[in-house]
Length: 456
Image (tube, rainbow, N blue to C red; front, top):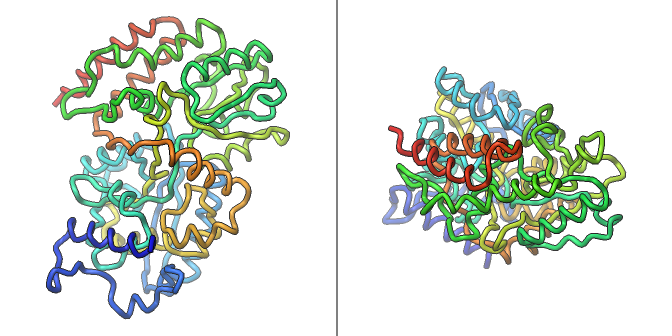
């Protein structure tokens, strides 16, 4: 019944987004195509040659694990479609969006790319992405096994530009080995005060510090604000907050850490790559003063973090701290896959390559949910018994911890949001260096953020 309901809701969504023909019935796959769908609901058509001839490029960010598994999946695709080759172009997270902008300006975008939810609207507004709605309508892109809510998350102004590559959630990874040795209890849905108390205890007992979402304000600031019913940070020409006071709690996290000595400062981060799993102070350090007991990441990064961690470090997973965790937390498309406007004559071939990653059972048996729980329900169910301990931990975390205690995801950010977050990140650094108080940083973000949003 669940599978049938998902399909019906998808068809209703498509009919609302595209023109319906055949007496009001939405355009869908042919009866012959449907006969090629297995009894389990997995589309076996993707395992047949499609006749494409193309040298495709795929731009992505992520860990070495992601790169290796995705390349293996593309190798399987090329074995089936011998005329297709996919070249992967890795770009680190901090540089990814600048490179995307620069390559868009020079008409040299990769044929298809990873897109983060926070950057979806800005990518569409810059004309980077191909509308995928027609490919859903004609069956080239099969999302019949995907929850309609995840499908609509990839839409801007009622048109679909990106497809969910995995289901994800914010996750606080922590050094369970250290925490257990210190006799400290970590609970799910920690409040900020409870988080502060853990940070104090870890520092007092071991000298190990705490790293709080350094260089990732675009993720953690909205999370903190959601606890106070601010589920949308941006209006068209202004910030969607009533005053600078709305930002104070966020900057007080860093100010408190500085005053009490338990937070890692800019001096530790200056030689590290922001937001890198392999270069996070939780797994790369020389002394307790340069070590963090936790890391603010995403559930699908657990495997990569474990691979980067010392062999004797057991890693736990819980929720990010917030004044009201149930309001703050949410399920998110781990990332999207999208075709760019520079794909040209290879546009349809790029769509078919994405369709393969989503619907191919052999491909997902290789990737094993590295980008998050697979969005195609029958595929997720089929690979579940094959998941390793990490995959099962992530699935349980999403289903048992986050899903019952979360709210709907906030709207994606507009183009100007990136500049606001750059300003917010810079202000974090100033608070850590003692140049600004939390109140002063909040006031500056409020003033500069509104200026940025008002710019034409």
